[in-house]
Length: 201
Image (tube, rainbow, N blue to C red; front, top):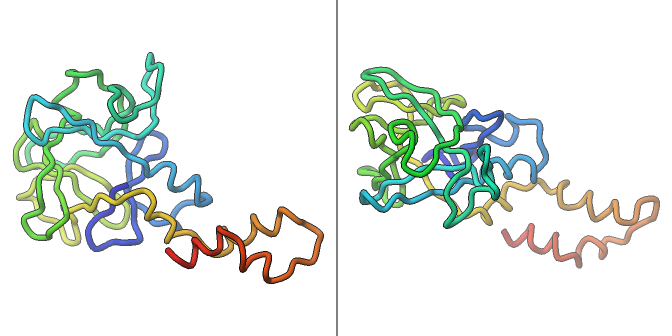
C-alpha cells in the first residue's frame, strides 16, 4: 500500500477507476472493503532502471484471463496525461506491455528529503511527479508549480500493517455474532486469537 509522507491515516485508494488519497472515515466501507482497494502492485519494466507502473492488485483489463499479480502483465494501471505546467488527474486504465508508455510509465526515485520515502516521476516528461494534494486528490504535477500542502513523497507499506487501522468493534462484533443470543464470558474474547493479534499490533 502507499501512503503520503506525514499522513499516516491516509492511503492511496482506487474506486470507480479513479485514484484518490483517503482516510478510513472518508469512505463508507468496512475494514476489508476499504483496504482491498488499497492493494497496489509495482510492475517493473526492465528496459530502464527503476521504471515501473503502478497497478491495482488483482485488477483485470478486458481480455485478461487473470488479475494483475506479481510476474503477470496486464491489469489496470495508474494513468495520467502530462502537459507543461498543468496537473493531471490519475485514473485506472488498461495498458498492454509496451503500450501507452506516455501515460502509465513512472520512474521511482529516492526522496531527496526523507530517508525511506520515494517519489514517482513521469517517464515521458522530466520534472512531473505523482503528488497528494489535500484533502483527497492524487495528481501528477510539475515540480516547479508549487502548491501549499502538496506532498511528493510516498511511503510503501506492507499490507500486514493495515491491522493497526482496524477498529476494536470490528474485532469483537464478529466474535460475538458466532454465539448470538447467548451470554458470553469475558474469557471468550480475552482468549481469542483475533483479540490477541489486535492488541499486539
